[in-house]
Image (cartoon, rainbow, N blue to C red):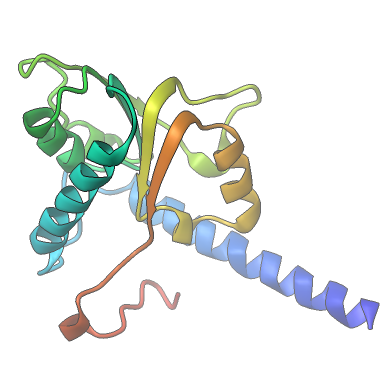
Amino acid sequence: PLAHYANMTHHVCEREESIQRVSNAFWSGRPASYPNYGSTKKRRLHEINYVLQQLQSLDGSLGSLVDIGCGTGSTVTCLQELTDISSYYCYDISSGMLSTLDTRSLRGATIHSNIVDLANLPAGFSFPKADVTICFGVFQYLSDEVVSKLLRNINSRSLLIRDACYMPHEGRQVINTY
């Protein structure tokens, strides 16, 4: 009945908020590198090949890209070498990781970086208008409500999303009990 459903919903919301607090504390405090996972580079190669294929399938030229949860900017660094995208907008909660982004436009693209806590977007916030937005490995750290709000703030004609993934030999991964 309704009282039981309301109680279940309350517990789910508490768990989502707990996951979000743990995630914010973990990621915002990250230094200029990711945790040491043995398959990170292999996953990035697979990911960049997939992204390039998706970008090539989009109609029209691509001039701008938003990377939500960009971390150290490895995806943007690769895309600068492999595409003609001229403007990148990179967002992450970790100032340490963002500090590794090369924003000097040496490859002909303009790179903008911003620290943002996706769980606490300011009123009226909106991501820049762009041809494509990518959001890799972020949604699993946010509540459903925050994900919905985040999606409403994206101003792109295309959106690529990846949730956390592990290589089969790594087995199940647990971060702070979640």
